[in-house]
Image (tube, rainbow, N blue to C red):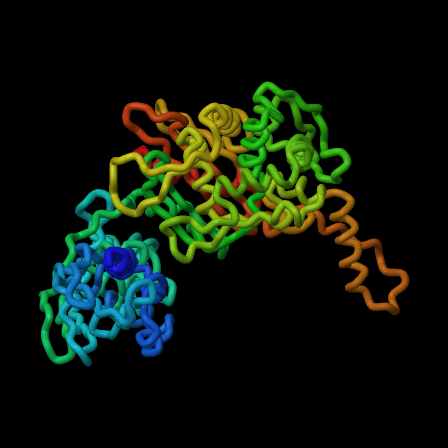
Length: 577
């Protein structure tokens, strides 16, 4: 009899333990489901559903319903208590924090199908949001407030205001403000999260697009579950937005580039705060070979790796031997690295780039921003350099001086310049007025940046960029000129190309045609693109931040002749001279 009692007691204990284990598994399931919900991990939520529930909706449809419901509610986040046992299932208190409708709170039932380790959540659509009932879907009608005004950095000049987006300085504002229209596919998801309905008028270019989050305000509207009103709010206009844009800088850039060719661009950045003070033309959409401004990348890599020092010396040559690349106008060039950089010696930087090699050159270019989208600037063209594996030694050498397949924007050159001015840290750009230092990322060491400032100062004081010198007492300037060859302008290659073109133009029947006249040279300036990288002051002093500028003038002579004066005028305006 005692043995029978022991068996019965053992069976009872097993059944109790088994029941506890089954209930623990169900509790863990409910907790995992709720945790995935608060993380908005809809795939993990779906994995916790039972078979019947999965038969109601595929994972894609389930995700669409859950995400769509939260988007309609303009949800910022989902919070929840720990699930509580309620009969065979669970209940959980859920708080959905929304942008437009405050916090939507309620109890959501989590029924189960199956039991124990084989249990699953018996999901139905009403469980997508607190307050939904069976058969109801969530909908929202939206009323947009008036768009906020855009002010210049002075805090008073209106760049775009009112329904018609009028300006106190229309001729200047037109350079930077942009236009309104229907959101692009790229911008639409972020705007939806702000509560902006599809089809609403939003910024599609310029400051109007870049500052959409600050300008749209808080939409109003009504949130309905079926025919029931869950929440209702009035629209609220945002406060006027004080931008980083300087009227003086934009005016100076427009005036300085008034005689520019069809493709030109100017970008002006405060190197410490990351504020974009102004831009002009195709500042971040036009790409051109960067010419010798690329020597900033090459020199920085050489200094960082110990391949060169500012005191390193190089032979005085007319060309880079073994690479068939001449110095500008065949000049004799060389000396210290500082002298070679100041006079933009191809005979030094072509072999220096070859010595660095493709892998290191590309790595440094990418650290400066090549082959990457610029954060905070949707639609900006990406400056490019070929992958290291795609370049043979001759192209590596050409890339080191900004030729070959390398292409850059005015924005990229300005960012590189700001990085040097900011002790080797690249600032995150902003179009909002601020006095705070920008978030940055380290590109080169502070020591290398200091050496680069020495090199770039020599360009202005005793090199190719003298015309970029700011004429303000006590303000020093640093920079780098660039002249990219779009066609051969000198040497045997140019002569051969000219002869071939002349021969091709002659009728076959002409046997005694005169010797073709060489078309070498650049009399109209259209065979080269001019660039200027510059910043002033060279170091921050008396609270004045170094201002960086990148200037592009496509098919327009040499950087020192046509782009440097633009940089001077813009920097002078930015520094209040």
